[in-house]
Structures are given as structure tokens and as C-alpha cells.
Amino acid sequence: MFQTLFDFLFKQYGDYSTLHIVLELVAAAFGVWSVWFAKKENIWVYPTGLLSTGIYVYLLYQWSLLGDMLINAYYFAMSVYGWYVWTRKVDDTHFIPITRTSIKEKWISGWLFVASILFVYLVYKGFDRWNFWSARIDTLTTALFFVAMWLMAKKKIENWIYWIIGDLISIPLYFYKGYTFTAFQYFIFLVIAIFGYISWKTHLRNNLQTASR
Image (tube, rainbow, N blue to C red; front, side):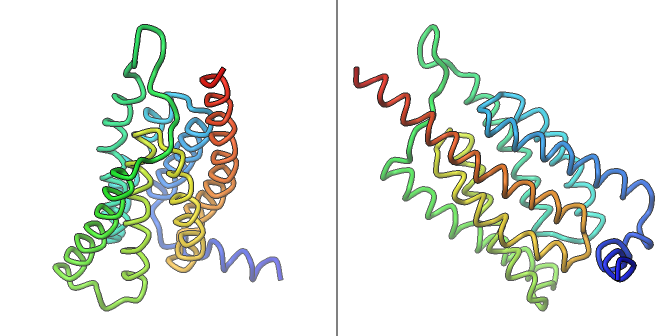
């Protein structure tokens, strides 16, 4: 029974190069650290995220997972932007605070979601990979994560909701694709995202109470 479970989870790695296995483990580790730092509202979310996404862009290109590769390329770019936003001061002593999305930002999120779906669909069609059902799921998760990353860069608490939904979908999807280490990474992402939402919500509530005094 143990052998059957082991083969289910890791047998596909027998066809992978040692370099790719090591890179996936390193990328997953930095990805977990990045989400942990995000939960803590720590600027190290971005350096670790850049390392993780940079490695994943290379790996996903090698594995021909175009939607996932686009997600990580976008993460990489948004990490640079988020790094800038998070280090910007609103006055001499305070950095950008955690806030809720405004009406305008909700509209932008909606348009970004729709535009992401359309963009990834066109990419898959262009590379003749829309024939797989997993491509449709990739398109959905890409759109969710595009919005989540933009909201996180803006320090909006709702980013965690998009991460949680996307993680829930990604866990079984990566198991199906045969990338067990990455599936485990998304499981850890899910747990951290839930606690991240709780932590940011508490932080936001405390800030509002302080401001009202």
C-alpha cells in the first residue's frame, strides 16, 4: 500500500532530470517562505518571491505549461512593483498600510480577471493547447492569481481570498499534472493564506480602532 501511494505521488519524477527536481524543490521552498513573509507583512515576501517565480518560469517553460509559466512571469513583474509599493512611505514614519479594496479597485480587479482569462485563452489557442481540459482550469487559476498578486502589491486584504480559492483549485490540479512537490507547496500556501487573511484582518481592525481614538 505504501509503495502504491509512493508511486502515485513520485513515480513521474523518474523521468525528470536531477536538475529539474532540485530546482522544483528550491522554487517550492522559496515560494513557501514568500507566502509566510506576506502573512507577516514582511518585505522579504518579494526577494524570496522573485527567486521562486524566476525558477518556476524556467521550469514551466521546459514542461510546456504555458498558463502556469505566464502566472509566474507576471508574479515576477508584480513582485518588483510590490517591492516598490511596500517600501513607499505615506509620511516620514509610516509605510503603506493594509486596507480594503475601494469600489474603483473592485472594478479594476474584475476587468483584470476577465482580461487575464482572455489573454491566457489566446495564448493556449495560439500554441494549440486548448484541447486539454486542464488548460481551462489553468485559465481560471491564472486569472485568480493575477488579481491576487495585484491586490497583494497594493496591500489589500482581499488578496488572500483570491489566493485561497486559487490554491484550493491548484492542489489537485498539480497532483494530476504530476508535479507532487508543487502540489504540496500549494497545500502549504493554502494553510498560510488562511492564517494570512486572519492575521491581516486582525491587523486592519486594530489599525482602525487606533485611528478612531
